[in-house]
Length: 98
Image (tube, rainbow, N blue to C red; front, side):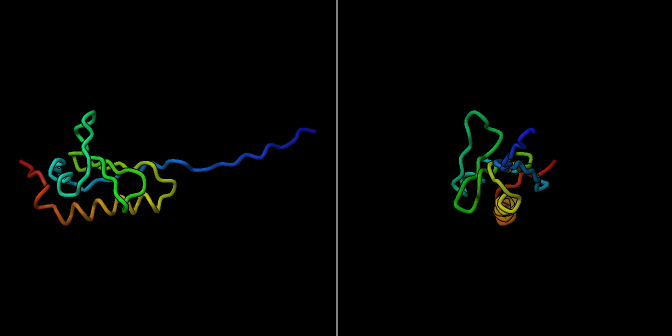
C-alpha cells in the first residue's frame, strides 16, 4: 500500500494590477508622498508605507502593480490607498493628455 502524501499549500505572493486611467508625474507623486523611484527602473515609483502591505509600483501610465501580499484583501487595500492619494493629489500629479 502506498502512503498518501500530505502537502501543505501556502499562498506566498499575490500579484494584482490596477489603473487610474491617467498619466502620472511619478517624480512629483514620489516627492509628495516620500516614496522612492528605483534608478534601475525609472518609469515607476515604489510605494511602501505602513498603510501598504508588500509593495505597490505606480507607473507613469497610471497602471499599478501590487506584489508581496498573501491575500486579496491586503492587495486591494494597498492599491486603494494609492488610488486615494492619486485622487487627492490629481491636480498636482496628472500629466495632461494632448
